[in-house]
Image 1 (cartoon, one colour):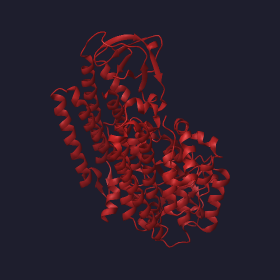
Image 2 (spheres, each protein chain N blue to C red; image 1 turned 90 degrees about the vertical axis):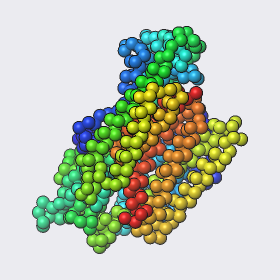
Image 3 (tube, each protein chain N blue to C red; image 1 turned 90 degrees about the horizontal axis):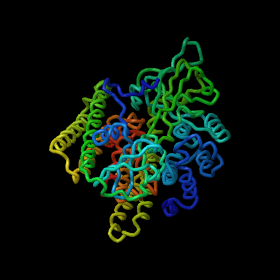
Image 4 (cartoon, one colour; image 1 turned 60 degrees about the vertical axis):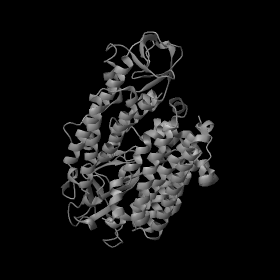
Length: 216
Length: 364
C-alpha cells in the first residue's frame, strides 16, 4: 500500500543522516569503532546510542583519542535520536592528546557524502516529475519546474567544482548552505513526499544542525 | 528553557492561555500524537471543538495563537478541520447540526481527503469515483485512493472528494460519518511515517467499493455549479489564511524565544529583532486583510494566495535567521526551537505550494 506514495522513480532511495555520518566516519576510524565528533563546546555528535561497554573514538578539531563513554552525558532528544543523531556533553577535558588532521578529513568526507546524497535526491525527484502530468503535460516540462531544476543544476555544479578544489575549513559553512538551498528547492518540487521520513526535509534539518554543531 | 510565554500582546489573555497549554504538551504529543486523547478536557481543545461559526478573520487569528503555542498539538487535536468548513459550505442545516453534535459529544478527530497519489492536489483531475452499480439504486460506491491528508487513519469522521462524472461540475464532497467509517473492511488506512510535523498524522487511505448512501453526498440541494469545484475553491480560500497564520504564529514564537536568549546582546541585535517583528506584523496584517476580503466574497483568491505565500516565506526566513542567532547549546536548552526548525517547511505543502499560489496571484 505504501508504494502508492513513494516517488515514481527507479532510482528512488531513502536518505538517512545516520548513514551519511557513518559512511564518513569510516574514512577516519576503524569500521567497528564507536565514533563521535566533538565541537569546541565539548558537545559530541554520534550516530548510535551510547553502549556503556565500549570506548568512543572522539574526533575533535585538534585531536583524535579513545575515551570511555562514561565521560559522556547523553542529551536525550527523541526526535533526533529516532533519526540516528545523538548528542552528548563531554564531562572531561580531552584536548591535545594526539594531534591529527583527521577532523578535516572527516569534514571533507561528510560534505562529499552530503553532496552525493543531494544528487541522488535531485535525480529521483526529476524522474518522479517526468512520470507525472499536469494538464496533460509532463510536470518536469512545465516552465516553472524547468527553472527550478536549472537552479538545482547550477548549485550542484558550483558545489562539485568547490569539492574538486578540496574544501577548506572556512568554506564548509558556505558549501553546506548551498546544499541546504538545493534541498529547499528539491523538497518543494517533490511536494508532500518530501516530508515523509528519510526524505529531503529530514536531511535538510540534519545538515542545518550539523552546520550549527561545527560552528565555531 | 525560555518558556515564559508572553503571547497576550498578540492574541489576548484567553487565546494566550490556550497557547500556553499547547506548548506544555508539545513534546508529549510529538512523541505520540494520540496522547492528545488524554487531554480532551483542556479548555483549548473545547474551544476548537466548539467552533461552528467562526469567520475567516476569527479563525485566522485563533489559529495563529494556537500555533504560537504549538502547531503540532493543534493538528493532532479533535476538531472540525476543513470538513467543518465544507459542511458549512455545502451541508443542509440538519447535516451541519449533526456534524457538530457528533464532533462535540464524541470529541473526535476529522479529516479532509483531496490529494491523490497520482494527481496530487489537482482538484480538477480527481480520480476517486462515486458510481452506482445499477442506475435505479439510491446508493453509490466509492473507489479510489487518497493520501497526504491529516488524521486520515485516526479520524472518525471526514470528507472525501470524489468524482460523480467528468468535468469540474462532477466533483462531489462525500461525508463519511463514524457509522460509515468505523470497522469498515472496505477502507484500508495507514498513517504515513513522517519526520516533520509528525502529529499531523498524514495518511494513505484506500476506498474499495465503500457503500455511500445518497444522503452523504453533500450539496444535493445546490446547483451543479455550486456543489462542484466551486464549493471546494471557496473552502480552500477560506482556509488558506489559516495555514499562513500557523506559519506566522510559529515564527513569532521562535522570534520571541530567540529574543530572550539573546537578551544580553540586545544592543547590537535590536534592529535585527525589530525587522523580524515588522515582517511578522506586516504578514499578520496581510493575512487579516485577505481573510476579511474572503469573508465578504469567498471566490476572491488572489489576496489569500498572496498572503499565504508571503506568510510561509516569511516564516521560513525569520525562523532560519533566528536559529542563526543561537548557539548550539542555546538550541539544546530550548529544543522547541529545534522542533520549529524541523517543522517550518511543512507550511509550504499545506493548501497549495508557493508555485500554485503564484498561479492564483497571476490570475491563471
